[in-house]
Image (tube, rainbow, N blue to C red):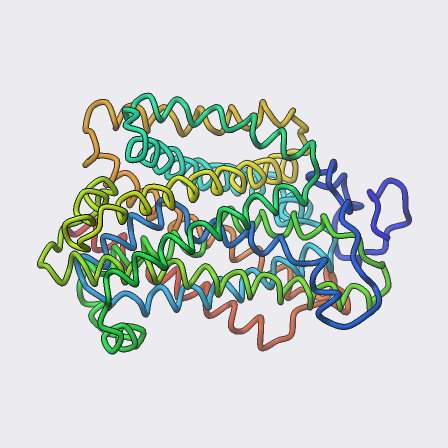
Length: 450
């Protein structure tokens, strides 16, 4: 069984500069028993969970803003971006599981161990910026959800979001499986809410299928490219790469090579199933916007409050806005859990600093609350929508700084040993990184040239 490295002989491959350090999330490291015998499906049940924590990051409130803006502006055309982003996510999260299980390190620890401080510290700063951008979207989304459902002013809602630290700490004390159960339950609520709304919207399913086909308009239309990068940044999120490589180590599995190979396989199946579920939710958001707002000629809908007020008259049902508000609030709560865990992994992995959970949570949340509060006070709902989309573009720009190290580590046989990623996987991951970097460069050039 896996135990903290100070209590066992190192079993990880060589190629790292130092011995394996204390694991991140040490309080839950190896805390969940797996089933070494039985059928594939029996074994898989004990590995199900981390993938859904990762999937939450692919459907956070920032994703809603970009998907709603894309659906209202361009109809079903950006469904192809959602699909492509999801395929990229499946590939990259599989590499995260391989790194966490195969090397016994999360991505933050691997960067700290493999790179000199002159490289590792900037990577840490960029990772923290990505987490703050993620948390910013969650703060705004949760505050809007509270406003839509209970009439709480946005400014007050932003401050209330700081209290979720106590919910997270309580669940961590109950056990990591409770956190996973909480996340999966809220995902179920979100699914039901969107299922009902899609049924009410009655979209053109032929156009939906056509929307998954690639189009060159994304590259020639700067506004479409901007929203596409927002969707990409909201789907393939930097903090998720750190999160997955850490939480996959909550499972207790054997140290032998066959055991670890099987653990990688089961963890990959877990994340793939969960991310296909995330695609379903993301596509539903975009389809809902296309089938209601774009169809009615409302091509500038981006604010979540606009969506809430427009749904009732357009769908002919008073329950539709309530369902939207419930789904948004559940989404915001879910995202705060995973952002907290990712922040803890990043800080502990890069700096080996152990802060109490409540302190880490409040620091991260405070950094996000300040700009969110300023924007809501000075610019109102319209400002929050623009800030949501901008936060997702920031995440997209941060992606290469997490993806490139991940691909490098999992392709290095000295570091991964027999569990090194197959060459075809590395080639696809490298292509993914190249596409993201190229799109980011084009976005910067377009912004610079107006």
